[in-house]
Length: 304
Length: 304
Image (tube, rainbow over all chains, first blue to last red; front, side, top):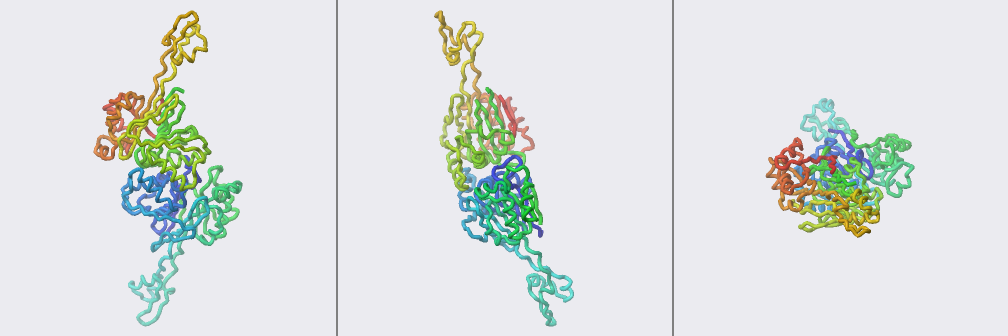
């Protein structure tokens, strides 16, 4: 219930191959399944990873390069074939609505569920989703086309009752919800009991920042300060630093610098160019700068 | 050299699944590789089947339902990444140009090779490709949206020299090409030798008709009369005849009726609904009407 779970559906750069998939991942947080990016083949990866299509109600697209959204038209068509009737919310750069609606129109196959587009144009960070338990904000990135990362944060939960203290002061159940909300209690004899005496701090809210695709951008640091997990693209190794600047991608060491400066809990690397023999090389280079590095890989699951 | 080869990349209806792919196939004929339809995942299927991307110069799209063309934007992007510079010719319904160009524009990633669209609008059969060895014509089909099948025909080749006869009459090499082209020969002594005495008939030109997606349409019969291979969709079995009429698809028996009336050499079934336990059921039903039935399956190769 209180865990955060990240399933990597695909984390390789550019074109899909027999054994590597373009970018897509699913974040489970506070009972939501958020789909982040949707490269070609995502729907098959969802099936392979046994993720229930019906639990996805929000899709976040970072940018309109094919390896991050060419799986979206097919996924939407499949939702229709599966008889979906719930709303689907799509967050992505301006243009995504025109693209999806054109493809559905050409096939004369409009969805039988409400497809709600939230088109993004701002170059400043903005709140794009909020409910009682979670917020999602954009993270403006630096890539060849307009691109946003996404920052997922749990909200601070209710305070936890200290049952021993509550029993000691003989406080009735009727007061519990107020106490969890942080209120003090005045007993019948007039004594005032502070909330701190009756509760423990709630668990620290968890957070996840998704940053792909992007060049090295130090301005990210304050936006993602202290997040628990940071997924930062690392298309290249140091030896291809020149390509990284030219194509507005990052190296493993650049990703690690961002992680270090933002003092994140864990750095997850991904969006690997397929030119390298082993993805372990990305971990080796990043680890020279930041200690807690993990490698994303297709089908890998991270749990908090 | 003189064979025709059909590789099935995908032949299942609707949504891609872990073990079944939507429609795409490659026809090798007279040294061409023609790609026919391009459902999501086609580029991975091309790799799995070890088909050289660079040999594909012509792509034929039957209609604009996702399971027949959602793999196309990704494939085109991959051609770009592979450094293609040769022309690519795309044949498909009007609208395909707008869709592809919009997707490439949104990603700010126009191709660095000429992408030439041949948009189809006619409801009559028309010739869409011709060179010295092959013709490709449309086959207007009956589906929920504008749809064409495609008819691939080898042209009649040169006549084959009868080397014994040529030696007997002591005819020099300089005459051979004329003889292969069907000319008679006058010897130095004035005798006239007819071409029939000097040559054999060339092999019968081969032909392949691709008909998917379509309802049962008897008007197809004269268009595909006597083709060597007919691929005809058979989404349903007899038990789902009611769905077949409603969705403008065909049953296995309907496909077999077309094959029988057109007196084709071999019927290849495909575009199966995934609701059935075994595709063998399609062959069983079709075989009650037409004898020479084969089942398409992903990765299967047919050679003539």
